[in-house]
Image (cartoon, rainbow, N blue to C red):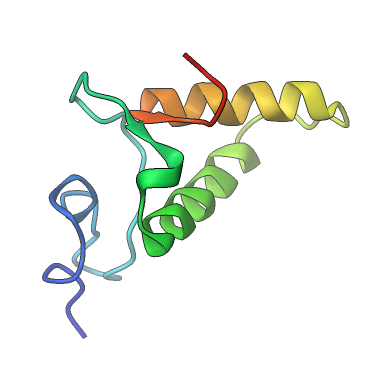
Length: 86
């Protein structure tokens, strides 16, 4: 099954033709931030999965404050604004 027709433009460019799995490695180039609550549920799922892969590359931490900060910063780099952030 080809995923390109189902994915938004910003995600489709990251689809690997060999495996056809979406991977978000680079920040979105757009400067307009989208609110987390405005994203479709499947977009949220894709971002959460991609963040999980990114988090695997970071040094481990037990601190929820650090984990939350990393997630919020990563979302901002991908043009998504977490609730309660400016």
